Length: 396
Image (cartoon, rainbow, N blue to C red; front, side, top):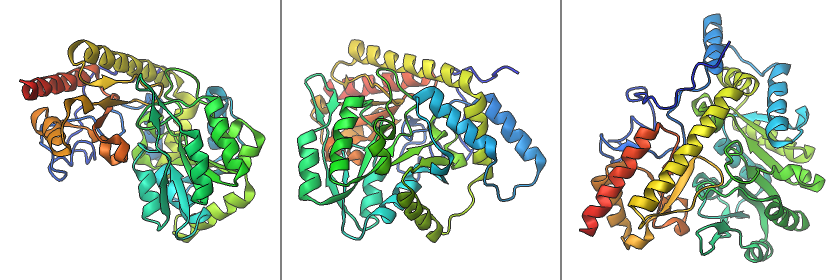
């Protein structure tokens, strides 16, 4: 049976399906005709193998509790070996409804009220929420940019803050959302060594690990044996195969003590068996979805190159550092000199675009916009043309 869903150009109408991305515009103060390139899900049908597996699941007609058979772990294990040269053990695995859920469980399990938790802004905004809403103290080790716009870690500040703020937990984003860095093994070892030396637990969110266009994704816990003792690695098929709504993530915790604390916290919140449909989709995706994955990755890579060329030729005021990973581009509009309110007017009212305002990722994101490129190229082109017209209007 061949993969049937390799057409990534066709625009699929997602309105009136309950989609967060498309059916909440008026509620969120957005124009109904705004182009949605914000939340990180794709506008592509998933692998036909996933569809077929879910169809068979639905036809069975009994949707009882399910904790996955042996073939589930084998599919997950095989994917990580093939794609990331990382060998996981079955006992390390804890399944959760999602990585954001796992972040909050980890903060609760490994820290106490008022403890310091370190993040690196601008970064995926639920990181800060997981810290602050759980009554912990948020400490930022801001990323820096070089003259070409490439982000890098401030290693001295990283260690200084771990010591000064008595940091108990560090949440790493790898590859980094929204700035698109694929951290090198050397960069990861520098922060891994610091955390190991100071007994800091690392929550490594690696959900975008399957989206790498330059460099190679290195699983932090796989770089050194000692990192296994301090690292919780968060993975999921949700971004890779566009199945986020099916609510399944695979969290790997080699350290038995940490795993027990994590599992107790999940149990205390009342979460037990995972979503049966999510398990079915994950198994099919990792076992049979390789052709779809390769096709999708190639298409998104071309979308990113298209956006870069478009901006360089037609809108040079808007800077874009080509991401090494993720399907998100991070646009720098600071040269326009707009206040936050004027930026919103430009993007939402004039361009009629629904993007992610950079400020939500932390103060360092002010003046930036995050754009989801996992859509048909015609939609991306239309969005960039709208942005171009809006910028020309305010300049004129």
